[in-house]
Length: 90
Image (cartoon, rainbow, N blue to C red; front, side, top):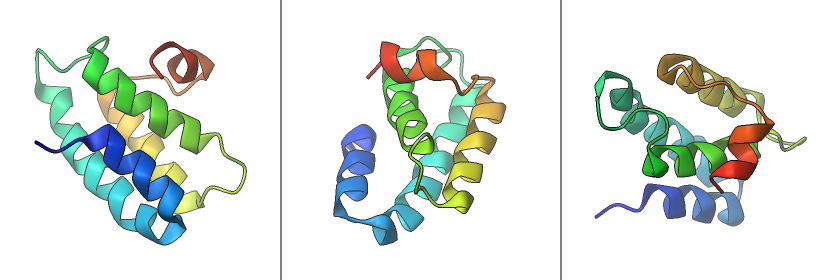
């Protein structure tokens, strides 16, 4: 089993170089959730991962290309990137 949320958190704590690989990888995995009937909002697994990504997106020194990757993912999943996603599912 691949713990996606733990993978993202570990990459964040390891350093920005790891995030350059992990965020696009996770985004590609989560893109398939847009076509799923089960992994739609408010699925707890999906929203837990999205809350971590939203928290990272709000970090002031976060890389612009990674912010864009998260914004594109949110648009594909039809999830608004706002404060409520950060605090509800963390």
